[in-house]
Image (cartoon, rainbow, N blue to C red; front, side, top):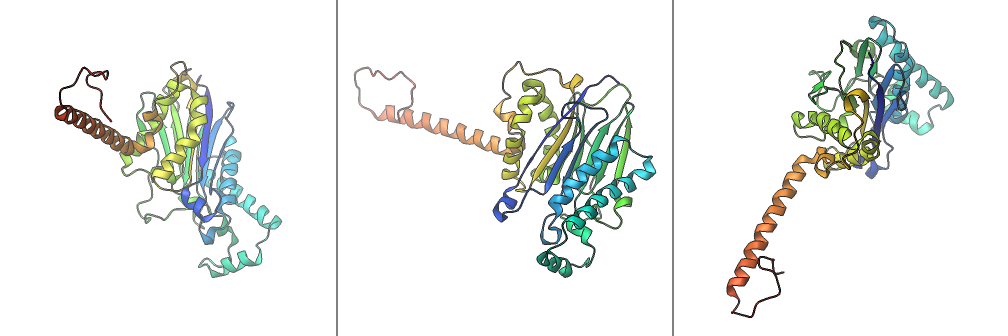
Length: 325
């Protein structure tokens, strides 16, 4: 295939972690920030909380492992094991270099899982890789992999395991991690998508309806076509922060692979409209619009009634129809 792929992405710490003085638990990595073959993007969400006190490190190891293994992926049946082993090797090395401090050992002792130190690094893994003949999607745990067609139609690749409760997720630290890792291979048959997106669950959890979340695919595609990759990349941290602040208050990380043949060389039309840049807050935009409309009507009504109550006077220098404040 002749498509040229480029990666971009950003991560924003949520208000909840800001308030508690905790680091961003998410991670993002790609080998294609300047273009590469194969093109890979990966994100991870560390579980956070007392029991997973090294999950920010675990999420970083998750994206590193994804980039390493997906450069030359093994056969489908061997891929889950290769990814888990690569992640655990990093965890084991970190534990050797940085053993648990007494306070951390006390935390481990209080947990149900007891003596397994790997749990402290618990994190998810989401990745997408574009090869010459196929696209590979990999996911373990919550979060979202989205495929955005060239006409903006957006498809979710995997759905959450219905057996899990709202705040539960599968994890790299699970004993059954290999069997729970999902993968999908898609042949490149001449109609590559425009965008491939990987995001942590703080993004989708910021939307009241799933349909609203899925609209981000077309929103971002139109922004990139209008303002260009570099402008959107520069604005992405602010966009993610605004979305988190108005929604989940959680860390949000978004990684994207862009089909440069499909998104075009946009940027001549100037900055993207504010309404599009605020795609995560459609309901806020509607409320603001209503408030503005009401204010305009109230001002007009006030001005009209003031004029009716005024005694005749010489012509005013104020143009007819201007609201009197």
